[in-house]
Length: 539
Ligand code: PEP
Ligand code: MG
Image 1: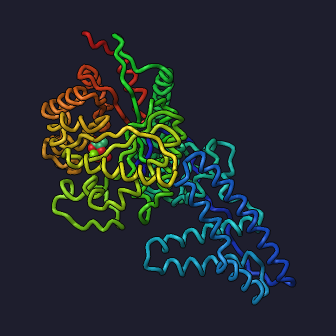
Image 2: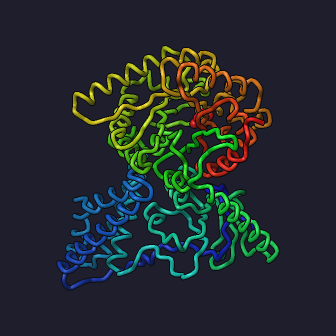
């Protein structure tokens, strides 16, 4: 049997399938003689659950950063919610029943109330109330939540995985996971990437796969159940080749990005959030060349606060331990829609109200982000770059805003460091006036994904045009060359952070053009390094 879904992390896994079972939640209503003793049991369970959540929070903080860990703090607070606690007390005392039953009823009631609310955020709290109630019941029953009862590592199948479940999985026992629900940006997908195991979502699977052998192909999104021996052999070989390649590439860790004739280039990584930093470090990137900060906004139900953003930027700065981290300011609009921004429908969203245009039009949002970045700058080496620039005037407006933010922080005696300021060159206009722009900033980073779209007038999202969306088009390459030359004339360093940066058929061209930096996805770092080390630019 072959099942299909959407891969959210590549790799190959072969092993036995185990369907993730939530711990046994059968709760029996029992009459008790001493309700006060049940109250005491509940209080004890609550303390134990809080300790568990605290440990999960610490673990998640280390592995995936504060933003993703925050859910466990929310759960700790929910356990102390007076309405929730009162309801449990009331059921125990008024009905004279066991604590398990009182917790289960309270959980069901509250989840129903939340689920019926209009507000999306509140509706989602229904799952959290269930989550904390289940945890309490497990503690009361003496069970451990969601333990994998097997010695052998497995391919874990689940309907969906709550963040609390994914984080507490024993990684050494999970080869891959396959879920029916979830999305590319869900907590589950983000955490899976951090766990560095192949993962496929959107797979509709029958229950009888439990215990069978399976193959997960994280490259194609295919999952094979009870595969024939020949397919197992084929995938075993693919897996070995995969591992061999990875092993060979790992030998390049710690090595310089230097050509045979001694030309050096910085190789940085692109990330979407705190959780990707582990992969950046594992692949030995020299820094982060593009932190797509809009993911903080996309993951949020409302504008992320200065504090939330500060904590994410600070975590990344600290984890990178002094290596440069370039944060790109909010780049929403077009394909990246966020409900609470109420951007409205546009005829031509790619050429519409987006990125820096929104930030300059809604300075309160921009200022919050700039304050958060500057505050975090104190904890590492940060740089800021601005997306979708078309004019010198925009850059001057931005710099004014930056000055205001710095003055305010200084007045408030909040420490910050000076940071490099750069712009993305992703419109033909910016490329054409790059000589003037270079006088205003410290660096350029070319966003070839958008630069190709706007230069060729081809919507990068339109599948029908995929075959002619060509970043190798001479018009695009001419602009790249022009931007490097203009940047260097004014003392700016120049890099590429679009997908083209990882295209090893062009690495030599980029080196010859004189690029100072390439920023690519973490998994491509060592491949590009390998390429650089094989090039002689004098030939
Ligand atoms: C780009 O346009 O090349 C780029 C790096 O930005 P994004 O893909 O996020 O638009
Ligand atoms: Mg772009």
